[in-house]
Image (cartoon, rainbow, N blue to C red):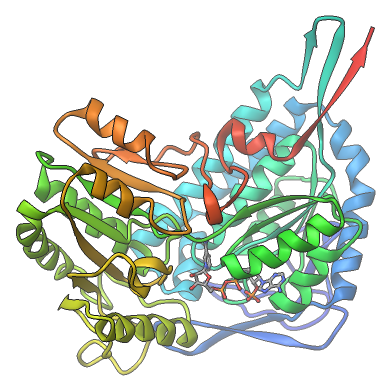
Length: 480
Ligand code: NDP
């Protein structure tokens, strides 16, 4: 059925907020009376309310997921794939609605909301429909028959930065594997998660296979991570919360996948096409207002071409006009956090060459931050080490390749990165020495089938493609 709440008034219009939890195949009233305001980051106006779920809601959802598990796990992979294919088709059909919802709750400019926030998760959903249909869930190894079986009930906890992509990157492989799911989306962006639940419902996913509990992290999120009926917790968000979830899962000897922060390096080797490397690098950082875990927030340039790179970066940054190409950050707390980092960068000796901590001219409303470029940043300083999660890039100078590698690898993170070089083989050799999970060579395109995930404190496990599917499978062997 479609998402009509049984327990309250829904917001109607282009963007819809449902005053209900999606559990066991229907929208039902939340156990508690608490509500979360959903705010448009451009207007700062409340655009809807969703339930602040409680441990009771989580428990009901986990029970529904457990009850649905045997049936879904036993459903032939081709049938599971067919449902995911139907979901993908509905995402295509409801493209405008999805994009409008992400624009409303995240503030993403409409073109970006469509091309990235909508089309990327739609492609990912399609990729898992194809993978589920073709995957070898059973093979003969010598005298053994080896089976890939679903891990069980998945507790998925997602952040706001790519609100639908983060959900699909967990739900699609989990469902493809035969797992059932309880999702706790970010409190700032629950509406597209509700829309996604309505789409799964419309696609005919059996009751209880996917469940949605909106709520606050320390309440609903923690209850989900701690629930004994959850077999695997998949979390994307801050390293601080990820560490806590990892510890909880470890104590219960429960599978865990963590996709955490990043401070990725964009390494421009001598001889690279500097203008292209800088332009693509700036676009990479300022996309989504800098709220991308894999953003190349540290640009490393050789000393001989450093000044030229700074000039190019300033010119490129000027194109990111707040309120036009550059959207706001998600909420007031993030805006203050990002501005605080900019002030700290100045205090620690960084030179602002574009942007700054003040509000953009004439923009009193909206959680906007000026696109900010720092030059002369020392590698050990706070803004060169910590994830800022806003439109801020630091340019650093290196003396030789060994110096560049030392700086590139000199943070606790290792999620992504880029290498630019005239000699592709040399760029690849450099990338192989980077302690990071994913590197784009000379502007290589995003690949929804490539494994995505972190080295070091950027996380545990991989998302997307067959590697992403494997996270949700466990192996059994029968000997004959
Ligand atoms: P969090 O890590 O707090 O939030 C991510 C998700 O975890 C949300 O659904 C959140 O709920 C939930 N959560 C929060 N606390 C708990 C808990 N104790 N137990 C279980 N779940 C919990 O990130 P923030 O939104 O606070 O962002 C802070 C910083 O984290 C950013 O500035 C950025 O540096 C980093 N971050 C990294 C992301 C990435 O993609 N790697 C994504 C988002 C943030 P709720 O929404 O209610 O808080």
